Amino acid sequence: MSISIPTIQLKPGKEASLRRKHPWVFSGAVASVNQIPEDGQWVRVVDAKGQFLGQGHFHEGSICVRIIDFKDNVVDADFWVNRLQKAWNSRMNMGLIDNTSTNIFRWVHGEGDGLPGLIIDVYDNVAVLQPHSHGMLRNANDIADAMQKVGRDWKAIYVKPAEKNGSQEPYYALGSMVEIQAQEWDLKYSIDWETGQKTGFFIDQRENRKLLGKYSKGKKVLNTFCYSGGFSLTALQAGAIHVDSLDSSQSALDLTLINVALNGYGEDKHAVIKADAVEYIKTVGSDYDVIVLDPPAFAKHLSAKHKAVQGYRKINEAAIRKIKSGGILFTFSCSQAVDKDTFKGAILAAAIDSGREVKILHQLHQPEDHPISLFHPEGEYLKGLVLEIN
Ligand code: SAH
Image 1 (tube, protein in one colour):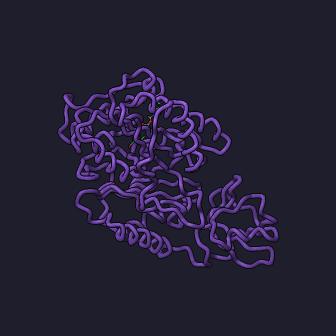
Image 2: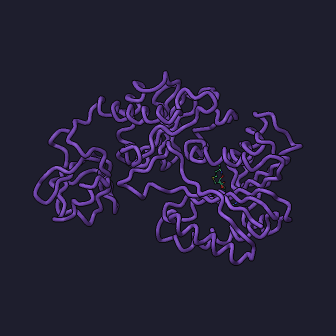
Image 3: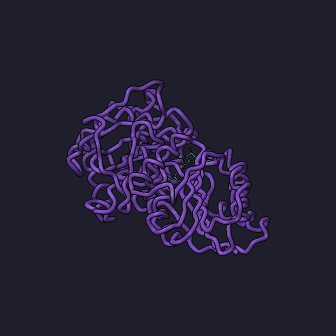
C-alpha cells in the first residue's frame, strides 16, 4: 500500500490482540492519527513505537479498523486475486466445487477467510458479493474484477450491500439477472439474490437440513421460520408423510411453495401457514413428530442478549410442550451475542418448565464454508441442538 494512506498509532500495550491476529481495532485503543481517514478508507496501524501491525479498512464506530492484511503487502489487483483464490481452494478441499448434488455455497466468509466485511455466495455460476462494511463497498469493483479471474466462468456477479441505501438500482459488476440451476442435496431452488433475504438463501443450514432428513421418514413435520423452505424439502425428500411450513412473511411462503413445486411435491404432502411462530405453536395439537425452530437473530447486539435468551426459552418451551412423545426438535440460534452455553441454558430452562424428559442427540453448528478464525472466536454464531422429547 502506498505510504500516503493514513496511519493509526495505538496506545502502548494495545497491540497485543493484533499480534495474536485478532483483526479488530477498537477506537479506545487509538493514540493518534496522522490524518483523519474517510469512512471505509485503507489505513495502516502501528504500535506505540511505530512498528507496523497491519493494514485494513477504517470505520467510524467502536470497531474503528478491521485488519485485512497483517503484512505490508501492496493492495493491488493481484492481492485480491490471491485472497479469493485461497478461499476458493479451501472450498475445493471441502468438496464444494464440482459437486454434482450441491452448487450453492459460501466462497468468502468475512473474518473466517481473512476478509472482514466481505461475504461472497455462489449459486451455480452466479456469485453474489455482499459488502458488510464501507471499506468493502469501496473496494467492490476491484474485488469483482478479481472474482472474474478465479473459479468459474461467471455468468453474473451481483453486488448487494448488506445495508440498503434508499432505492438503489440492482448493480451487476458482470452480466445481469440470469436463469440458473441452483441446487442443494439434489433439491432445486429458485434463488432471488436481488430481492431475497441475505444473498437469497440461508446457506449456513445446509448440513443441518441434511440431518433433518434422517429423522423425517414417515413423520409429520412442522418447519417454523421456513423462509425458502429448505428444511421442508429435505424432510419431504426423506419421505415425511406431511410437512407444514410456517413463516410470518407472505413472500417467504410464496418462495417455499415455488421450491416445493419445483421438486415435484404437492398439496397432498405439504402446506404453508402464515402466522407468528410463537403464537402458533401455543395453539397446535400434539401430533407433530418433528419440529424445526430456526428463528432470525433474536439478539443483534450484546445489549439485547437478556431479552433474546427469554425469547429462546419461551418458544422452545412451547415446542417442547407440544411435540409428540418420542418427537424430535431441531432448535437453532443464529445470534452471535448468545453463545452456545447460554443457548443451552435457555433450552434447559425451557425443558425444566415443560416437565418433559429431554435428551440431546446432536449439537449443531455452522458448516465448513462458514469457517471461524481461531483468532476471532466472535465468528462462531450458528448453534443448534437436536433434542428427543418424551
Ligand atoms: N430456516 C430458514 C431460514 C430462516 S430465516 C432456511 O433454512 O432457509 C428466518 C425467517 O423467520 C424469515 O423468513 C422471517 O420471515 C421469519 N420470521 C421472522 N419472525 C417471525 C415470526 N415471529 N414468526 C414466524 N416467522 C418469522
